[in-house]
Image (cartoon, rainbow, N blue to C red):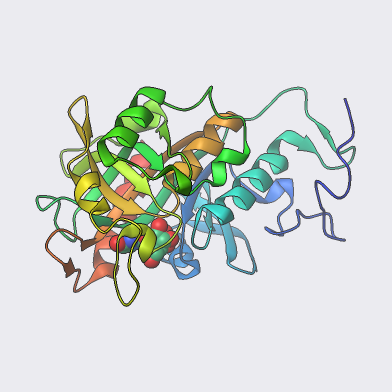
Amino acid sequence: MEKIKDSELILNPDGSVYHLNLKPENIANDIIFVGDQDRVEAITKYFDSAEFSTQKREFKTQTGTYKGKRLTVISTGIGPDNIDIVLNELDALVNIDFATKTVKPNLTNLNIVRVGTSGSLQENIPVDSLLMSAFAIGTDNMLRSYSLQDVTNQAIEKAFVNHTNWDLSKGLPYVVAADNNLLNKFKSDTVFEGITVTAGGFYGAQGRILRLQLNDEFLNDKIDSFEFEGIKATNLEMETAAIFGLSKLLGHKALSLNAIVANRKNGTFSTNPYATIDKLIQFTLNKIIG
Ligand code: R1P
Ligand code: URA
């Protein structure tokens, strides 16, 4: 096995991985991703016991047990670029031997569930509802640095590009599915399901106009009328496609759950987003132990 160079897999003086500040023994196989650092404790406050806590930059990690199951909660901060760091470093923690800097012969698969917030594109998916992403369309380009063809759904990609008359000077959108086993495990009558569009920004990239003119002011209307084999494009956020894509490439299983805090169709925002996020957290914890 070839040794990975020190400049490529960077370890801190204490042996922890560069950005996440974690050592292999600090993480569980079941991991919850949140964007916001403060959401980590909003989840771990429900744990039976805590064993580990650390933070570097926006990456806060806590590991403990919930109803006897060992779980790690980690904040990713905002955006697909952060997901590149979090997923590569988590994978290194389980699949690269830090002593020899070689890839382990037997690989470990992590289960990753994102508990995030999102804006709905559909009038009938109101603020304060919950939504699970069956597919994600990445419009952010981060994943295009990798060789992608084995993990993307090219039929949906083509249909989306045609339907939206996508301006390819912004890069080619990519489509990745959620892990099917996790999708079935978390299915519920109380949770909407749809195609999530992951944007590389919150304002222009999600069609928000404050003072700047957009490349395509009708893009959100074209996205919200997109559907593929009966599944609609339902919501906009900033991480899911990158999580699905990198997880699939690295052999991990990923799901994304969203608390709908904004409705872009009727212009509303939740009056109590933290209550909706808490509803999503309790839903997630109960399903994860199932
Ligand atoms: C934008 O406000 C942030 O909220 C959503 C978006 O994906 C983006 O990260 O997710 P989180 O609530 O997990 O941060
Ligand atoms: N997060 C997003 O990225 N977009 C929204 O509209 C709401 C939350």
